[in-house]
Length: 267
Image (cartoon, one colour):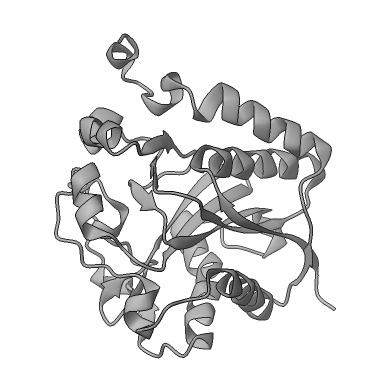
C-alpha cells in the first residue's frame, strides 16, 4: 500500500463555486497537511482568468454580458480559459508529498506526468511534452494559444493547460482537459492574439466521451503514476463554510474580477 491521499470527484458545478472550493481545499491543506486531488466539471460556459491578467484587456466584456457568461479570476497564473466541455483537476500538496524538485518548471513535468498516463490509457499514442518546441509568449491572452515546455501535445496540438500557485513549499495546481473546444465562442469572448493550435480530447478519439467515466480514469492514472492510494472523500464542515465565504466575498465580487483596474469598479 502506498501513501493515502484524499480524492474528491464532483459533478458539473458553477464556476464561482468551483474556484472557491479549490481554494478552500488548499487552505485546509495548510492546516491539516492532507494532500488532495480534486476532479470536477462545469455546468455552463465560464471563463477563468490567470491571476495577473487584466479583465478589460483580455475579455470582450460586452459580448460576455450579451451571452450571459460569467467570469472570475484564479489564484493560479497563466492565461484565460473558457471552461465547459472539459474535466478539470486541482492538486493541493507540498513538495515533500511527491518528493518534487524545487524548481517550478521541473515540478510541472512531474505533476503533469499522470495526464500523459491518462491519455495513453485511453489509447492515444502520439502524446508528449512540448519540451524544446515551446512557443511561450506574453503576446497572448488565451491559455491554448501558446505552450510551455511542460505542456502536453497530441499530434503537435496543445491539449489543456496547467497553472500553479505556491506558498513556500506548498503547491496548488489546477489543470484543464478539454473534451471539445468551441473556437467560435472563444474568439467571440476572448481577445485571442494567436491562431489556436489546440484541440479537445474528442477530436483525437473521434467519439463522444463519458465525462464521469473519464474522471475516474484520470484518478486511476494518478494512482498508477505516483503509487498513491486515493481515498474517495468530501469536504468537511470547515471547508464547506470556507467555500461559501470565498464564493460570496471573493470570487463573485468585482474587486476580484477586475483586480488592479479600480476605474472599472465605478459603474
